[in-house]
Length: 72
Picture 1 (cartoon, rainbow, N blue to C red):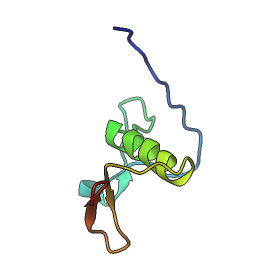
Picture 2 (cartoon, one colour):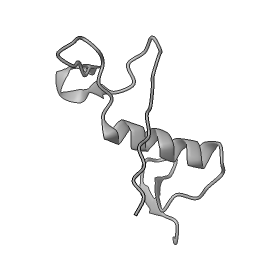
Picture 3 (cartoon, one colour):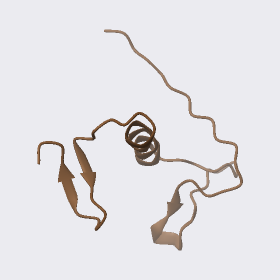
């Protein structure tokens, strides 16, 4: 089995992953850098696959926010 690592490097003036339990403030690390959780990274990858590549996601949401699956 081959191990693979992916590095996501963000440089932007935005809040990519706000903390809903803290008025959507950025999640901060002890060294004052902003932390982006794995959930946000996975969402970014799913959005890219759907919106840019045109892939069908196994679990997605319709325009009303209702969960749907690829098989119906």
